[in-house]
Length: 127
Image (cartoon, rainbow, N blue to C red; front, side, top):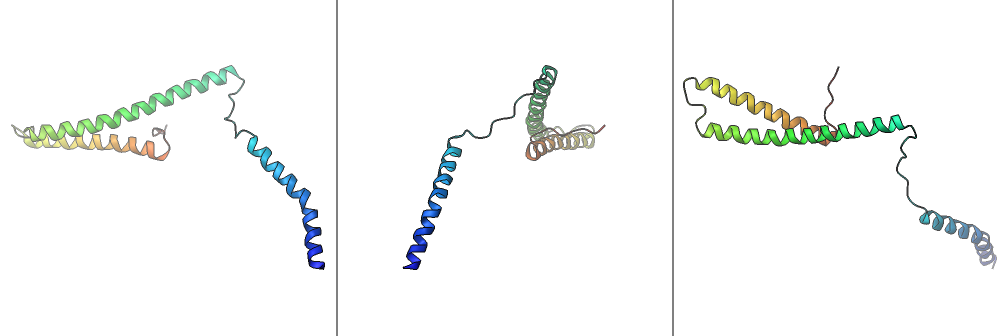
């Protein structure tokens, strides 16, 4: 009987705590999620942020265009070689050109892929 009375007393003591905890959970569920950061009140700073966002979008588009051009360059080089570009007076010089152009195209494609994979930003140049 003591056990039943103790459990009953414990249940009565926890009742208000459980009710207030339940109310707190319901209140949190009704509140909106985290809000996006607000823009600074300084108009000059807002202008600078907008300029940087435009420049970033432009650089991202440029990186994507470089990747696409690298793919096209590689395809055209293969087609030129298949069509006999390396035949002629000095085939070794043409083979060297093809190799250099292929390497340039591969590096352009690689740097664009790294920029997108790592941070979504184009690679930065040092000063």
